[in-house]
Image 1 (cartoon, rainbow, N blue to C red):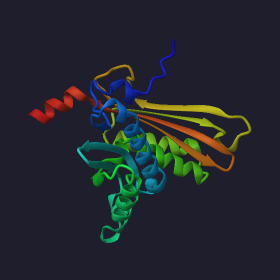
Image 2: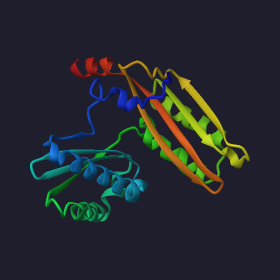
Image 3: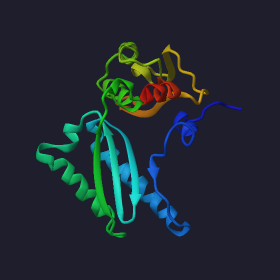
Length: 219
């Protein structure tokens, strides 16, 4: 048996909360899941430049609350909130069949170096600018550890450096125990579309233990 399981899915319901929080009758369930997928896809495709990490969706009655965690809230909100108003209008159009009201909340990520998706997006941008992948890996691992990570693992797969044959490069620093449910492992997958092909970027960041965080919060 293989061990290739998504670390986030492995922890959801045990140590991590669900990213979509709502209940629905059986006949509406599939429609709402498809609606959540469309909302997330729209935000990722059109607002990825703002360093969007996670999109959480909560439903209460006829109100749909979209909670966006981002490293650059200023870019997402825009001047005098224009970008945010545009986004709300676009999401509201997607709800025209159900006439639900959309609300958007923005959460700022304090330490982007500890967020796997932000780190993955940074690596992707640098690869697309044709920067040397070994230098990117060394710099990224050092920055995350300096920000307070317990461990980080980065895996690149594809035609690295424009080589004729595709290969895999994995670099690790610190501890990344993927099978320990108590470990807060932040994971993300990004695709770098370079001129010589697509390079897959996988990032795992160990941000400590959930139990230790609860103790410090209660102290």
